Image (tube, rainbow, N blue to C red):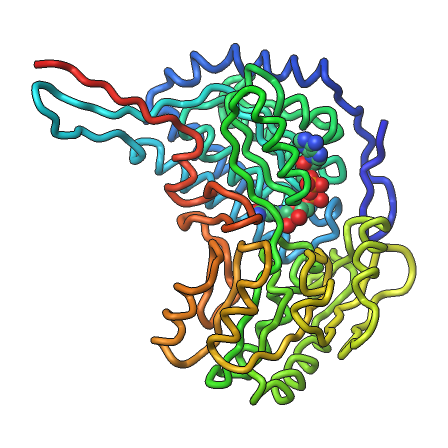
Length: 447
Ligand code: NAD
């Protein structure tokens, strides 16, 4: 029975049985049995039930935030905001149920209609860094389209998904519509990907595992959406508001202790302002409050595990510009770290997934775009400039799915989110996510 650990205290907070192939098959069978009745629920009633999930999440913000904070080591204030977003996501998809529909298409000799059909049973596989949030990005649109769900949380962080499943039942969504299976990725996840009765996999995780999910899905020509790793650039031009850019940059990479697929972990700075910006950035980073996640003032908690801490520390091997402080005592702490690098260094090529930012100088706009795009990833990024035309030119030139101008925000319930290149494909959030949880059917009737 594997232990669930609080990474800030190293204490065991729960012990859960590990499910295997048999339990996964049982969950898929339940989801399959629940599908015909769930797809037949009227749009109005389906929307009402999803909205009830949203209001129950709102009513249980404190409990859900505490679970997420204790299981992931997230600062409690940030965890509360994340749970608030989970509620917004369910509100959004409650409202979307009857707004994602087919078309009539002019054709000769008859009438042509398209319908949006649900897929059936969908397998949703999520990572440990934003467990509840990312679960909601998948469960919300999957339910809105009339699918039933088997959700597999990450081994390290299963608790909030289990609580969500209880709230789904409390909302009145019938048994079997949302199922949660807790167990190892290589057993439960793999089984979901290969299962003939699972129509689609919504996967968020590493590019490495995403690659194997895509391969395994080929056996059943399964639909997949892949939300994978990132190595995003925060591009600061000399004409930017440097104070504002420097004040924001630490939170763009140290938020969630850097365990964020959108982390702007390559900070590209125009050479003429590099020294000034580096000074401002060090000052801002010094102010990041690292410590007890239960303290309302804390801005950064620990890493998820000691094994992950070892991986993160392997990236820091010289040219360190700044190393922050960490609490003493138990907990998988790692300091905020700024390093000076070139885009060819390992720290700039691979996803660190920890609080380590690489500062890289560039010569001019063309050089900035070249360096920013010189990565196999393409998830998010930021552009800091007071020149609107340049902001738009660079935004169009960057090979990335999500961009912010004079901001480091990435995610909103109503706007599409997802990657270019090896950061994956398909989109979550917004109306676009509904395309990934439905199939287009074309019907022609001769008149
Ligand atoms: P991971 O790839 O190790 O695991 C993700 C999930 O896949 C877990 O639930 C895991 O149990 C499961 N899994 C593992 N092996 C599997 C297999 N063979 N078949 C099916 N499922 C399997 O990722 P992680 O360490 O949990 O999360 C960190 C990664 O997630 C980072 O690379 C990060 O960038 C990425 N991420 C991406 C986004 C995004 O939206 N693009 C968001 C958050 C995290």
